[in-house]
Image (tube, rainbow, N blue to C red; front, side, top):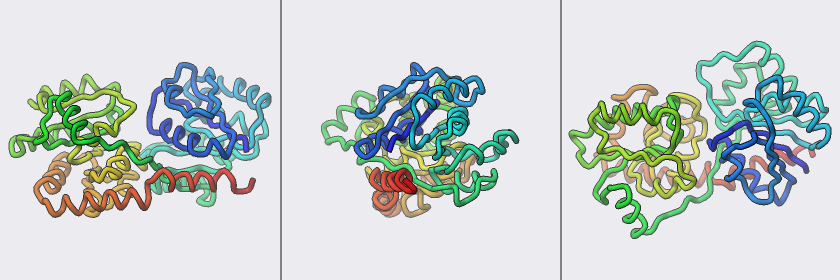
Length: 358
């Protein structure tokens, strides 16, 4: 089976990491090609055994991209064209006569209005849409996509790296942290939708009562400077560590007491939440989008009302002050990972997706 995947990401985000996991896991079963923008940072993260084609594109939705994709698909036919935020490629694929046109909805959009023309074209050029959480599937249905043409496949992750005690001590020292510190960790792009500002405000409200509290932000993005300025204004800059982008976030996740996902937008099945769950680290998450599916409230983590800083602070306090609750959540986090969010669970879904009707 020849499968062409098209992704418009120029940076490394959840969609790109997911694509790397899927193609790497199934490349012995199918002939994969990944088309992505020229100069994309994602190129370095893609697996061996998969053909990589840098391509001139303008965000994946520009009408100017359609003729180029059309020529390419006519010269390089495939059995399945699977796009990730690259609508122009899927439109060209339909024009080229590719029979199976797949798309993945990697995000929950919340209150979002799609252009009428896009909605009209979507079903015409999309055989099936993968939703990475039920929250995304519900939004697709509300946009007019028939339920029978939606497949929910949760993102899965491999067992993350586990640091030895000596490795943890070395990393803590590098970050000027102590083994006695209580670390609130958050992995993700430093962008408004990820809500790291809420975590900083909650930490500021708790710092007086929890002097060992520290915040570890893993990731980079356009909001880094504003988040650093916010930490300064809140008087907690000394308590916050900005790690920046890393290709090995699990090394830092090993240090978390709690994972915090304060997302106010886009979240479906968060990779960082599952990675932490695999390590037995529970998550305090907003109730936005797929977080309600990734985190079982009071079983594998705690949920708070999105945008409510006081509610976030209250749930962090619960988890840190109730030792029995924290024990339950740690055990529940690992169990939820094993039953729903392993890499093998996800690959079963994609294997079925690609082989059905073949």
